[in-house]
Image (cartoon, rainbow, N blue to C red):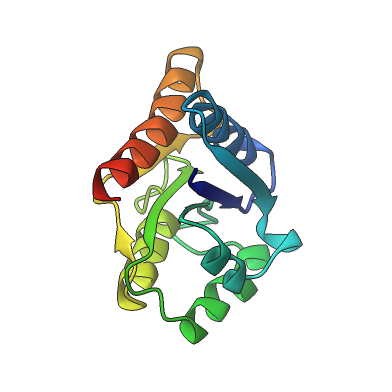
Length: 150
């Protein structure tokens, strides 16, 4: 059975809630998932999993959050060739760079060789009721795509 990691950075709890819903979807698919804050793990931990998803909120007008920077910079030390990954996050559409941290993280993972899902999940603030199922489905589709590859 494949084992998945969902790692996230969250200040207000919005991205954490998205991460929890994604993890629920993975669990509903019958897979194991570890849910970790990036402050409780390091980037090298992703190597211990069949695939991983990273959640990050966007700070200000398109910046990475401070508590995510160490994890982000540690990615530079990893060879992620052949590793499956996806990125999700929360943001505020009043800023020109809505969820830019999601895009920056996806680009970094691709630079390091990861097979990054072309689909990202971007939610404004906290997921609304109808978006909660979208979050669960994001996790379900990610692991299902991995099963087809295996």
